Length: 266
Length: 284
Image (tube, rainbow over all chains, first blue to last red; front, side):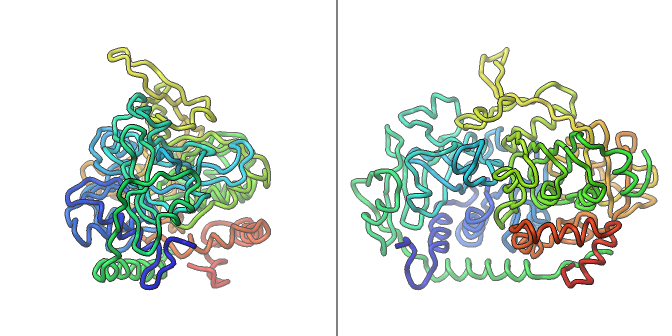
C-alpha cells in the first residue's frame, strides 16, 4: 500500500506539510520546482513569513502568490526583492555560501542520500532518460544543509543508484567531508511514510519518524535497501486544518492562474 | 548590425552543422526563431541550451540537430521533453549525441566564452557521475591554495539567438526581468541574432538595465509574440496551459509531426503560425 492511503489528505499534502514544518523563519532556502516549492511557500505563508526563497532563475527573496509551474515564471520575478543573472545566482549566492537550505527532489535516492535525476539504465543506452541534474549538483555541494522530498517505494529508494547526479554522503563514513564539499549534506529525507535522517558515523539514512497511519514494517518494505530504524521512532503530527487550508488555497489560486488565457500582442 | 526579417536573419546567419545556442531561462525564449530554423530545414546543428525544453523538443523532433549540450532537459513542471527523450533513447528522428553539464557548470562555460577564456572554473561536480560521462569536465589545481577545482571548456557558439523586449533603430537591445545566461551566451557567440517585441525610438533604459549594444549584435528582427508560449515581461505572460498541453502533442511521433507540419512547416512565418493556431482554436 502507499504510505498515503488515508482519508482526509493526500500523500503529497502530508509530505508538503511535513517538509514545510522543517523550515524556519529568515532561513535562506534554495528551492527546486514542484513539491519543494510548494513546501517552501507553505512555510512562508504559515510560520516563516520572512523566509528568503531563492530560485535558480535568479529570483531572490521571492513571495509568489501562486506556485510557479516553471522555475522562471514571471510571478517569481515580479514578487522578488532582487532578480540577478543566472551565472551570478550559482557563483555569488550558492557557491558564495549564502544558502542555508537546499530543497531537492529526485527520481531515486540511495541509503547515503545520493540522488539520481539523470537516467534509469545505462547512460549510453538509457531505459528512461530523465531531465538531468540542472542546479542540483552544486546545491547539494554548497547549501549548508539539504532536505530531500521523495515518495517512497523500492524503485525510488534503491540499494544502488544507476547514476549519481548529486552527491549526498557518497559512500558514507566521512566520504563527503573528505571530498571537500563545503555543505553538511542531506540532513533529512521526507517521504510519504515518514522522515529519515543520517545516522552518526555511518551517515546511512535511517527511519526516525513515521506518520501515524503507517507502520515501521511498511516503511521498511517500501525501501529498496535494508532500512535501519532508529531506536525510537517519533510519530509525526497529521496535517492540521490551517496547514491544509492554506496549502489547498495556494493550489487553487495556482490552478486558476494556469488556466487563465494568455493575450498575445499579435 | 542590420534590422531585418527573421527569415533573412536565419538564412544569412544560421548554417547546417553549426553550433547554435537559443537561450532564455523560462523567460524570453526565442520560439519564433526556432520555428524559422525548422522551416528552413537546417540539419546537423550542434545545439546548446541550458534548459532544452519545448523549443528544442520541437527542433530536435523536427530533425534539425545531431548534438546537444545542456544541463536540464524537460518540460518544466510538467514532465519529459518527449522528443528529446525519443532522440536520446531511440535515435528518432536521428541519433543525438549529448554533452551534459550541471547548470553551474554550463553558466561558468558561457561566462568563460564571453570572457574569451579557454575554460570556466567552479567548485562543482563533487560527488557526481557527470565527469564519468562527459570527459570535458576536468579539474585544475589552484596555484594559490592547492585546491582542486572543476573546469569546463568555454562555450563559444557560432550563433546565439535571443528574444528581447525592445531594440532601438540603431540595434541596441534591452532585456529586463529573468535573464538566465542570455547576456553571457550572446557575448560568447561569433554572431548574435535577436528577435524583439518592438522597435522603438528611445529604449528608455533604466540605469544598469541590460543592454546589448548594437556593435555586438549581428541582426535584429521585430517579431511581436515571438517568445510564445514562454513570455516577455511587460508584453504577455507565460502560457502555462500550452506547456501542459504540449505533453500530449509531443508524446506521440505522429501527433508531433502533424503539429509541426501544420503549424510550423505549413506556415510562412510567425504571424501565420499564430493565425493557424487560432483558426484551429488551438490557442492563443
